[in-house]
Length: 248
Image (cartoon, rainbow, N blue to C red):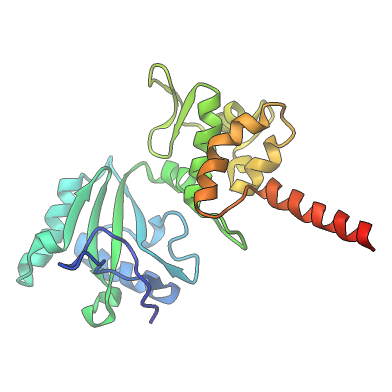
């Protein structure tokens, strides 16, 4: 089992996380076990990269807030902890739009625990807005969010994966339509597929005259993670190839 640390909501007295990363093969069985407690579909509502990579740090799951409230879900989880003589406060937490549960991997605490984040909203919207990074890329889903926020800021807008695109001045909703958000952030002919990843976003805006301003905040934040924007990596590689050619 991969024993790298996972989510950080549940911690012991030593302040170290009590949850670990979960292997891909264990994701669906663990969610199926939790479905028996909650009586709702979890497997088909995975968000981001949950279950799509070799390991996951936590399990991000969409819960339809038009059908269930956070209190509904907490009550169902608490019924399970009470049934097993457990302290609910050590197993269940609430924050923001989420209910967090310290979930036994495959339903067996001998396998360790993974943090499950049950996130309330519109599942269809969240599946797009909170999508993770796939394939061979150094960027995570959070880097996509950072880049979109950087681009929105320069244009007097704010991006939130839960609230959508809003006015920076009035906080009023501008759009929650992915295609319209793409057009507003990236340009008139953009579509939602252009917001798929850090790489697709950069590819769409890199020729804009205001490009440097659009990515300024993202570039600074990425640097803290020792990451460069894709165009920076490409330029660096091209320069190295030119230098080598000149030497030869």
